[in-house]
Length: 177
Image 1: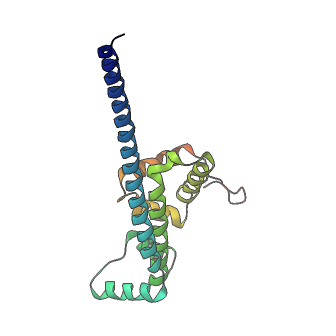
Image 2: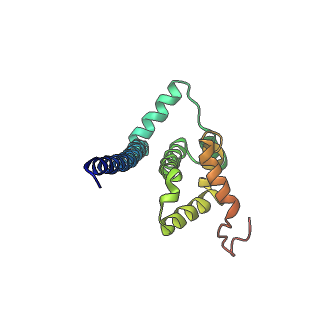
C-alpha cells in the first residue's frame, strides 16, 4: 500500500469520525434543549402554585373577594355551586377554588411527562386523578366547572381517557352512585 492510499484512508476515517461526533453533539444539544424546556416549565408551574397557595391566606383571600365585589367581578361556576349547593360562604368557596386550582396546576405539570414516570409513580398519579375527578365531590365539581371547559384539550383527553378506563373505589357502605 502506498502513501497516497494510506492518506486517502486516513481522510475517510477522519470524515467518518467527524460525522459521528456531529451526530453525537446534535443528540446532546437536543437533549439539553428538552431538559431546559422542562426546567422552565417546572419553574413556571412551581411559581404559579406558590402564588395560588398565597390566595388561601385569609387576609389575601378576603382582600381579593372585597376587590372583586367592588369592581363588579363575579364568582366562578365552581364557587357559585359551592355557595348555592353546599352552603359555603364566599370566603370558604374561594379558598376551595384556589386550593383546587393549585392542585390542577400541579397535575397539569405532570400530564405532559407522564410517560417518563416510573410505573409506581404513574400508577399513583393515575389513581389519584381517577379518585379525585371520577367520584362525586369537590374535586369532580371543580373538574366539571373549571377545568373541562377551559383547559388544554390534550390534558382533558388524558383525564377523560383515564376516567373511562378506571373503576373508582366505591365504599360498599355508601352504595353505588
